[in-house]
Image 1: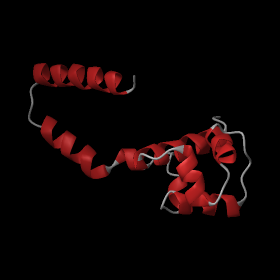
Image 2 (image 1 turned 90 degrees about the vertical axis):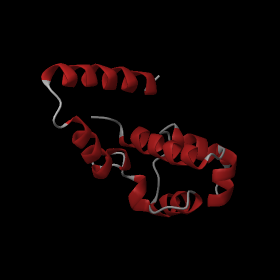
Image 3 (image 1 turned 180 degrees about the vertical axis):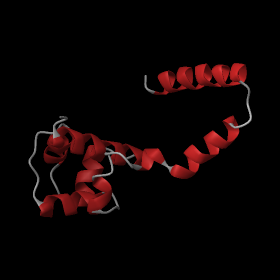
Image 4 (image 1 turned 135 degrees about the vertical axis):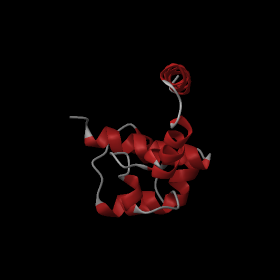
Length: 112
């Protein structure tokens, strides 16, 4: 099982990067020290509810959204997935295979 502190830290980092802010700025917004923030992102801290609330506030979000790294996260937007499936409907087998290869290649590039 994935370490919950590391998974949480990665989610905090993901949300911070989406905002385009540094650890220092995020920590300042949350009223926390930047070294503490860094330790959170590295999965080194066992947080209290109060600290989670400060982090959520610093990121302009809710505690609940900090836990959306699990299945059903924002990355799995049903509307986007539905649109992609709609684009693939009606294609023949050869076209579907080509689409699969293109998507697989694009996803591999995005994960680099």
